[in-house]
Length: 343
Ligand code: AVI
Picture 1 (cartoon, rainbow, N blue to C red):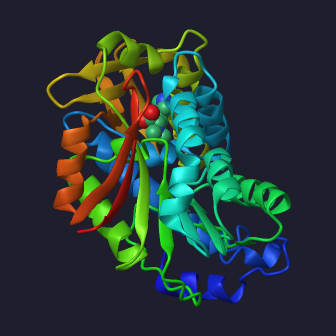
Picture 2 (tube, rainbow, N blue to C red):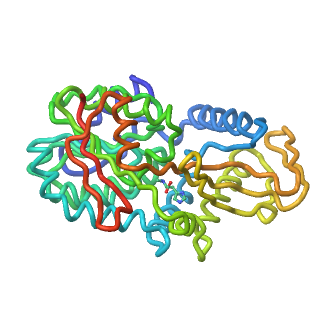
């Protein structure tokens, strides 16, 4: 996402309570744009598969199908993350609204279906602007329209792009009350160095008087953790394998999905769930004419989901020059929500 894109998006600022197509600052019909996106996707895929431990970047899970599969995962019994965070948000929303104050601008990187933000928007005193950001364009605009319909008095400015890249907030709206809302423990999908850099970027985005509300999944019993990522219905497996399907479709790959098995394990040393796709036989796969050999049981590492203690997350935040104003956890200590400000 570049400066120009953000500027032009600002021109398309919506004030009449509806989202029109001209808010799409980067048109999906622009072929050169699409192919350059695919080129970056291809470069990152080839880089990951050429490593001794083959890997793929987890941000590419989220095309339209992957985003829908993730929403399905959020409803699973095994996936305690979403319902625990939603219940906690419901409990603390008044307190959050008081801390945030009036006339806020709420920025949500990786907004997805935008369910949790509705709890917050409902509680806030006269929020001015909501800025959902997501990599999946169709999903972003669909969700933004739903939120716009429910909150016609709030301006909504959807921004499509890779929110993991540095974003300077260039909005014309000079509200000093900027709040980044980053629920879902998506911070766990970053490695520690990228998580620190990302938090530093968020700190830049909110300025001196803003705040960050961030959901962080906590370290807990290994069975609970592993079950959450190895559900009985196979949704997580489908989500994981969708990455291979995307490579087949968009990058001229020929993965045989039936020859890879999903597995998620908790790595105790790194304090993270790791998702892998395990080759079921010796095989080779071609992607854009480049060949990759797999031995039987060789894995592709597709995602990390780091889990934190309250203290280890505070240490991470401190590395990004952020301090906690308040921390909430549910009764079972499954999940935490932190209110961070610049230190
Ligand atoms: C988006 N993210 C926080 C999810 C997680 O729990 O790490 C992604 C996910 N992967 C498998 N299940 C859910």
